[in-house]
Image 1: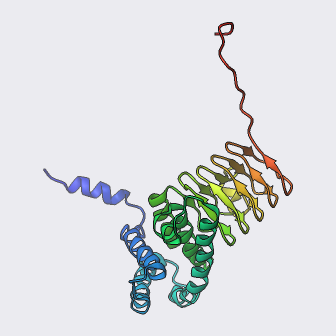
Image 2: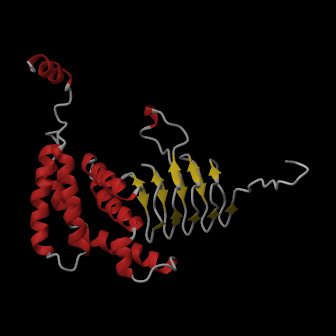
Length: 263
Protein backbone atom coordinates (compact mmCIF):
# COMPACT_ATOMS: atom_id res chain seq x y z
CA UNK A 1 0.00 0.00 0.00
CA UNK A 2 1.21 3.51 -0.81
CA UNK A 3 1.13 5.49 2.44
CA UNK A 4 2.30 8.76 0.91
CA UNK A 5 -1.18 10.36 0.43
CA UNK A 6 -2.13 9.43 4.00
CA UNK A 7 1.14 10.76 5.38
CA UNK A 8 0.66 14.04 3.51
CA UNK A 9 -2.87 14.48 4.87
CA UNK A 10 -1.84 13.67 8.45
CA UNK A 11 1.09 16.08 8.27
CA UNK A 12 -1.23 18.73 6.81
CA UNK A 13 -3.57 18.46 9.80
CA UNK A 14 -0.85 18.35 12.47
CA UNK A 15 -1.15 22.05 13.26
CA UNK A 16 0.60 22.29 16.66
CA UNK A 17 4.38 22.58 16.13
CA UNK A 18 5.05 22.72 19.89
CA UNK A 19 2.98 19.67 20.77
CA UNK A 20 5.64 17.21 21.91
CA UNK A 21 4.19 14.46 24.07
CA UNK A 22 7.63 13.56 25.34
CA UNK A 23 7.15 16.60 27.60
CA UNK A 24 4.41 14.72 29.47
CA UNK A 25 6.75 11.79 30.05
CA UNK A 26 9.52 14.07 31.27
CA UNK A 27 7.15 15.90 33.62
CA UNK A 28 6.00 12.62 35.13
CA UNK A 29 9.58 11.49 35.70
CA UNK A 30 10.48 14.87 37.17
CA UNK A 31 7.44 14.77 39.46
CA UNK A 32 8.32 11.29 40.75
CA UNK A 33 11.94 12.23 41.40
CA UNK A 34 10.91 15.45 43.12
CA UNK A 35 8.49 13.61 45.42
CA UNK A 36 11.12 11.01 46.33
CA UNK A 37 13.72 13.71 46.96
CA UNK A 38 11.51 15.38 49.51
CA UNK A 39 10.16 12.31 51.31
CA UNK A 40 12.07 9.08 50.69
CA UNK A 41 14.71 8.45 53.37
CA UNK A 42 16.86 6.38 50.97
CA UNK A 43 16.98 9.04 48.26
CA UNK A 44 20.11 11.26 48.39
CA UNK A 45 19.02 14.89 48.25
CA UNK A 46 22.27 16.35 46.88
CA UNK A 47 22.53 13.96 43.92
CA UNK A 48 18.86 14.23 43.10
CA UNK A 49 18.87 18.02 43.04
CA UNK A 50 21.52 17.91 40.33
CA UNK A 51 19.46 15.38 38.34
CA UNK A 52 16.31 17.43 38.85
CA UNK A 53 18.02 20.52 37.48
CA UNK A 54 18.97 18.64 34.31
CA UNK A 55 15.45 17.26 33.93
CA UNK A 56 14.02 20.72 34.50
CA UNK A 57 16.25 22.20 31.81
CA UNK A 58 15.01 19.55 29.38
CA UNK A 59 11.40 20.45 30.20
CA UNK A 60 12.15 24.15 29.73
CA UNK A 61 13.56 23.45 26.27
CA UNK A 62 10.33 21.67 25.36
CA UNK A 63 7.82 23.97 27.04
CA UNK A 64 9.26 27.49 27.08
CA UNK A 65 8.17 28.72 23.67
CA UNK A 66 8.39 32.46 24.35
CA UNK A 67 12.04 33.29 23.81
CA UNK A 68 11.77 36.71 25.43
CA UNK A 69 10.97 35.19 28.85
CA UNK A 70 13.93 34.13 31.06
CA UNK A 71 12.86 30.51 31.55
CA UNK A 72 16.40 29.44 32.40
CA UNK A 73 16.14 31.39 35.67
CA UNK A 74 13.09 29.43 36.79
CA UNK A 75 14.97 26.54 38.40
CA UNK A 76 17.12 28.78 40.62
CA UNK A 77 14.01 30.58 41.84
CA UNK A 78 12.10 27.33 42.32
CA UNK A 79 14.63 25.16 44.10
CA UNK A 80 15.09 27.64 46.96
CA UNK A 81 11.37 27.26 47.70
CA UNK A 82 11.52 23.48 48.19
CA UNK A 83 12.31 23.55 51.94
CA UNK A 84 9.34 25.85 52.52
CA UNK A 85 7.07 23.61 50.44
CA UNK A 86 8.24 20.54 52.38
CA UNK A 87 7.55 22.30 55.67
CA UNK A 88 4.01 23.05 54.51
CA UNK A 89 3.46 19.46 53.36
CA UNK A 90 4.60 18.13 56.71
CA UNK A 91 1.86 20.25 58.29
CA UNK A 92 -0.65 18.71 55.88
CA UNK A 93 0.48 15.22 56.86
CA UNK A 94 0.22 16.08 60.56
CA UNK A 95 -3.29 17.43 59.99
CA UNK A 96 -4.32 14.12 58.43
CA UNK A 97 -2.93 12.17 61.38
CA UNK A 98 -4.76 14.45 63.80
CA UNK A 99 -8.10 14.30 61.98
CA UNK A 100 -8.37 10.73 60.73
CA UNK A 101 -8.84 8.02 63.38
CA UNK A 102 -8.06 5.37 60.74
CA UNK A 103 -4.47 6.59 60.45
CA UNK A 104 -2.03 4.18 62.10
CA UNK A 105 1.14 6.23 61.52
CA UNK A 106 2.36 9.35 59.77
CA UNK A 107 4.39 7.11 57.42
CA UNK A 108 1.08 5.65 56.25
CA UNK A 109 -0.09 9.14 55.31
CA UNK A 110 2.99 9.86 53.18
CA UNK A 111 2.87 6.51 51.41
CA UNK A 112 -0.77 5.47 51.23
CA UNK A 113 -3.05 8.51 51.29
CA UNK A 114 -4.07 9.68 47.80
CA UNK A 115 -5.28 12.97 49.25
CA UNK A 116 -1.84 13.73 50.62
CA UNK A 117 -0.17 12.83 47.33
CA UNK A 118 -2.54 15.11 45.41
CA UNK A 119 -1.85 17.97 47.84
CA UNK A 120 1.90 17.39 47.60
CA UNK A 121 1.97 17.57 43.82
CA UNK A 122 -0.36 20.57 43.88
CA UNK A 123 1.95 22.49 46.25
CA UNK A 124 5.02 21.63 44.16
CA UNK A 125 3.21 22.67 40.99
CA UNK A 126 1.67 25.84 42.45
CA UNK A 127 5.08 27.36 43.15
CA UNK A 128 5.99 26.93 39.48
CA UNK A 129 2.60 28.24 38.39
CA UNK A 130 3.24 31.50 40.24
CA UNK A 131 6.32 32.14 38.10
CA UNK A 132 4.21 32.39 34.94
CA UNK A 133 5.31 29.00 33.53
CA UNK A 134 1.89 27.28 33.46
CA UNK A 135 2.18 24.20 31.25
CA UNK A 136 4.55 22.10 33.37
CA UNK A 137 2.57 22.74 36.60
CA UNK A 138 -0.64 21.80 34.78
CA UNK A 139 0.93 18.54 33.61
CA UNK A 140 2.15 17.85 37.14
CA UNK A 141 -1.30 18.20 38.69
CA UNK A 142 -2.89 16.27 35.84
CA UNK A 143 -0.44 13.43 36.53
CA UNK A 144 -1.58 13.46 40.16
CA UNK A 145 -5.18 13.59 38.93
CA UNK A 146 -4.67 10.38 36.98
CA UNK A 147 -3.02 8.74 39.98
CA UNK A 148 -5.55 9.78 42.63
CA UNK A 149 -8.79 11.00 41.06
CA UNK A 150 -8.20 14.43 42.62
CA UNK A 151 -8.20 17.40 40.23
CA UNK A 152 -6.57 20.47 41.79
CA UNK A 153 -5.71 23.25 39.38
CA UNK A 154 -2.18 24.54 40.15
CA UNK A 155 -3.54 28.10 40.24
CA UNK A 156 -5.68 27.47 43.33
CA UNK A 157 -4.49 29.04 46.57
CA UNK A 158 -4.49 26.64 49.53
CA UNK A 159 -3.46 27.49 53.08
CA UNK A 160 -1.82 25.46 55.84
CA UNK A 161 -2.85 22.06 57.23
CA UNK A 162 -5.12 20.99 54.39
CA UNK A 163 -6.78 17.56 54.52
CA UNK A 164 -8.55 15.68 51.72
CA UNK A 165 -10.07 12.46 53.08
CA UNK A 166 -10.68 9.51 50.73
CA UNK A 167 -9.90 11.93 47.90
CA UNK A 168 -11.52 10.44 44.81
CA UNK A 169 -13.61 12.85 42.76
CA UNK A 170 -12.46 16.09 44.39
CA UNK A 171 -12.32 19.09 42.01
CA UNK A 172 -10.74 22.42 43.01
CA UNK A 173 -10.78 25.18 40.40
CA UNK A 174 -8.06 27.58 39.35
CA UNK A 175 -9.20 30.65 41.31
CA UNK A 176 -10.39 28.85 44.45
CA UNK A 177 -9.03 30.24 47.72
CA UNK A 178 -8.83 27.80 50.63
CA UNK A 179 -7.51 29.12 53.92
CA UNK A 180 -6.02 27.25 56.90
CA UNK A 181 -7.18 24.04 58.60
CA UNK A 182 -9.77 23.08 55.99
CA UNK A 183 -10.95 19.49 55.67
CA UNK A 184 -12.84 18.14 52.66
CA UNK A 185 -14.12 14.70 51.71
CA UNK A 186 -14.48 12.73 48.50
CA UNK A 187 -16.52 14.12 45.64
CA UNK A 188 -16.39 17.76 46.73
CA UNK A 189 -16.42 20.35 43.93
CA UNK A 190 -15.20 23.91 44.36
CA UNK A 191 -16.18 25.12 40.94
CA UNK A 192 -17.32 27.99 38.75
CA UNK A 193 -20.92 29.12 38.55
CA UNK A 194 -20.53 30.21 34.92
CA UNK A 195 -18.19 28.87 32.26
CA UNK A 196 -17.17 31.40 29.63
CA UNK A 197 -13.79 32.20 28.08
CA UNK A 198 -14.11 35.93 28.79
CA UNK A 199 -14.16 35.12 32.54
CA UNK A 200 -10.61 33.73 32.41
CA UNK A 201 -9.07 36.60 34.38
CA UNK A 202 -11.85 36.83 36.98
CA UNK A 203 -12.31 34.95 40.26
CA UNK A 204 -14.69 32.16 39.30
CA UNK A 205 -14.32 29.74 42.21
CA UNK A 206 -15.30 30.03 45.89
CA UNK A 207 -13.40 31.13 48.97
CA UNK A 208 -13.25 28.74 51.93
CA UNK A 209 -12.34 30.44 55.21
CA UNK A 210 -10.39 28.90 58.11
CA UNK A 211 -11.47 25.72 59.92
CA UNK A 212 -14.21 24.65 57.50
CA UNK A 213 -15.28 21.04 56.99
CA UNK A 214 -16.96 20.06 53.71
CA UNK A 215 -18.48 16.59 53.57
CA UNK A 216 -18.77 14.20 50.64
CA UNK A 217 -20.22 15.27 47.30
CA UNK A 218 -20.94 18.84 48.33
CA UNK A 219 -20.83 21.34 45.46
CA UNK A 220 -19.86 24.97 46.08
CA UNK A 221 -19.85 27.28 43.08
CA UNK A 222 -19.03 30.89 42.22
CA UNK A 223 -16.24 33.39 42.66
CA UNK A 224 -18.26 35.54 45.07
CA UNK A 225 -19.29 32.59 47.24
CA UNK A 226 -17.58 32.67 50.64
CA UNK A 227 -17.90 29.87 53.20
CA UNK A 228 -17.47 31.50 56.59
CA UNK A 229 -14.93 30.26 59.11
CA UNK A 230 -15.74 27.29 61.37
CA UNK A 231 -18.66 26.23 59.15
CA UNK A 232 -19.72 22.68 58.31
CA UNK A 233 -21.11 21.82 54.88
CA UNK A 234 -23.01 18.55 54.85
CA UNK A 235 -22.87 15.88 52.19
CA UNK A 236 -24.61 16.51 48.85
CA UNK A 237 -25.21 20.19 49.66
CA UNK A 238 -25.39 22.63 46.73
CA UNK A 239 -24.23 26.18 47.46
CA UNK A 240 -24.02 29.21 45.19
CA UNK A 241 -24.35 31.88 47.89
CA UNK A 242 -22.12 32.88 50.79
CA UNK A 243 -22.77 31.71 54.34
CA UNK A 244 -21.62 33.41 57.57
CA UNK A 245 -19.08 31.96 60.01
CA UNK A 246 -20.15 29.10 62.30
CA UNK A 247 -22.88 27.96 59.90
CA UNK A 248 -24.08 24.42 59.34
CA UNK A 249 -25.52 23.61 55.92
CA UNK A 250 -27.08 20.27 55.14
CA UNK A 251 -29.33 18.58 52.63
CA UNK A 252 -32.51 17.10 54.10
CA UNK A 253 -33.72 14.07 52.16
CA UNK A 254 -37.42 13.39 51.70
CA UNK A 255 -38.19 9.94 53.09
CA UNK A 256 -41.32 8.01 52.07
CA UNK A 257 -41.95 4.67 53.73
CA UNK A 258 -43.96 2.19 51.72
CA UNK A 259 -47.08 0.82 53.42
CA UNK A 260 -49.89 -1.34 52.13
CA UNK A 261 -52.08 1.73 51.68
CA UNK A 262 -49.71 3.71 49.46
CA UNK A 263 -47.97 1.00 47.45
